[in-house]
Image: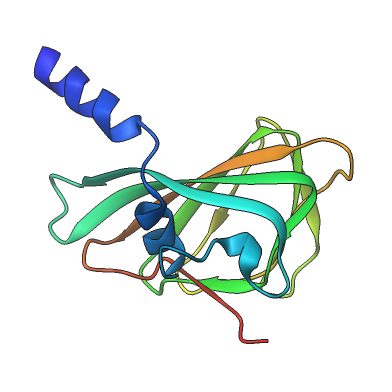
Length: 151
């Protein structure tokens, strides 16, 4: 059991900017906040593990941190991705597939289905930070978890 605990601890440690770039399919030198249409946003892949009983599928954890007033550009997710997102701190505004804009508070969660279009993903506050953890169940070979809309 000590081996499993050690492996889990290593997997949860913050990863390099390369892992964050993989999460958003960007070159390592380009952060999400550098994209037109985004502000005060940081995205970091913090976990990845193949699902042992589901060949070809993996789970990946992505931490999204928004400073006050921060937001991400509208985007789509991988066609194979099922996403379970939990707000860890603050409040996050979200709109999926042109539906209603909803605000999720710390402790609340939502699901995104494969290929969903995320129209709005933003901090609901102009004065407090917000964080969410997005857990992707995705094809292991998938290299682009999220693709920002072309501006």
